[in-house]
Amino acid sequence: MKKIYYILIAFAIATPIGLYLTNAPAWGEWESSYYKEALGFIPKGIKSSSQSAIAPDYSFSGLGDVSSYYLSATIGIALIFGIFYLLKKIIKHG
Amino acid sequence: MHIADGYLSPTTIVTTYAIAIPLWVYGFKKLKATLNEETLPKLSALSALSFIIMMFNIPIPGGSSAHAVGTALLAILFGPWVASIAISLVLLIQAVVFADGGITSIATEALAMGFVEAFVAYYTFNALKKFKFAPFVAGYVSIVAAAFITGLILGIQANFVDASGKPLYFPFNLSVSIPAMVFGHLFIGIVEGVFTQVLYTFLNKELKIKEQIA
Image (cartoon, rainbow over all chains, first blue to last red; front, top):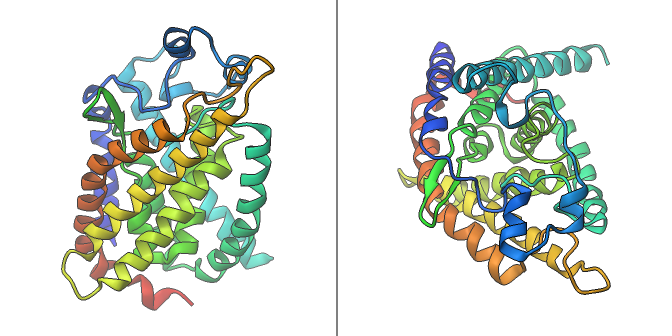
């Protein structure tokens, strides 16, 4: 059982590699300005949507790339463990 | 395969949520039956691993990038329903906390990276169980299937246009979106396949999940 935690920790420590392998966005996950260049306009739906989040694109304002990525990884892992733990509690008492 | 808010038409959003909600409800029941002292840490760890591997953006030919998902491994170890729910939770966190994929697109993403990838992986693995490389093939085929569904739903958006014929949402049609999504994931499929194969080989004996699922 411990092995899986080691694997998880190893991958988490390695996450900054994900920052340096490529700067290219995934297909279909471009900045809005891409559409302006490619089409001459930004489709209305894309233009008018504004998505706010605590750490958009896994970056925290005031933190560097690597620190942001580590903080994001930590938050993600903590939330997943926390939510499953709560779900199990709820199920047990429900 | 993440889709930002504003990329999907309201019709698509409503339709995908209408399909996903009953699947989530049923999957949640399966999860309830699965979660116990033994499975909880394992499912949490593998779901977290899935979140982490999605942070590894890998360059693909043509100047774009993509990432593995990890659904196949979850599906083989926990069954397709539980895997789909676990991935849906990951997608929810990505959308809400990191704006990686929109809130309106969670159903679409869950159908592709969750349900389609999980069921394709699960049945591929079971069909090839006798062969050593069944986990690799399951991972490879299932992520390509997920990419196909993502390309399909994205490409449909080009049909929603304003009075002057300009697309309102994602503007590239099926003949562009499906090949683009599938092509990239023919490469990422190798990563998903190797990940699934190696982790399955490493963990299968140790986790003994099947005996612990009610």
